[in-house]
Amino acid sequence: MGRLMDVSFFVDAQDCGMDMTSGAEQETVIEKKSCCDSEVILLEGQDDVASAHNDFDIGQLQFAIAYVYSYFGLFEPHTAQRIPYEHYSPPLIVRDIQLLDDVFLI
Image 1 (cartoon, rainbow, N blue to C red):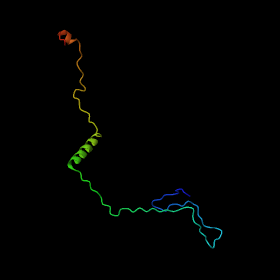
Image 2: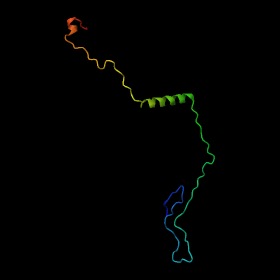
Image 3: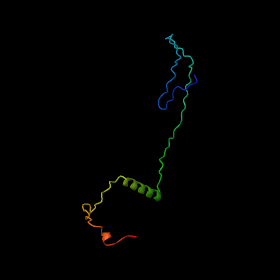
Image 4: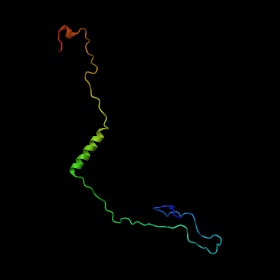
């Protein structure tokens, strides 16, 4: 009827549902010409498939190794640096030493 009803790649496609067989006479089945056309398009595949090996040259290999190393370096936990004077409290300033010694930055 001028429309596409079904497309199938691995199993049989369904028809349009307009079966043109006569059910009145069960002894003799009369088939009329269907209103739909069944078209089968068969595409041949490749039988001789060979795997392709892409060889890396040394520059590409060095780049890949550096990239992977730097990428995994993003996820390493940062170790806290030990600060030796963390618990050291500075001395109390009783007087302004610069003013007492008359030392000024100009």
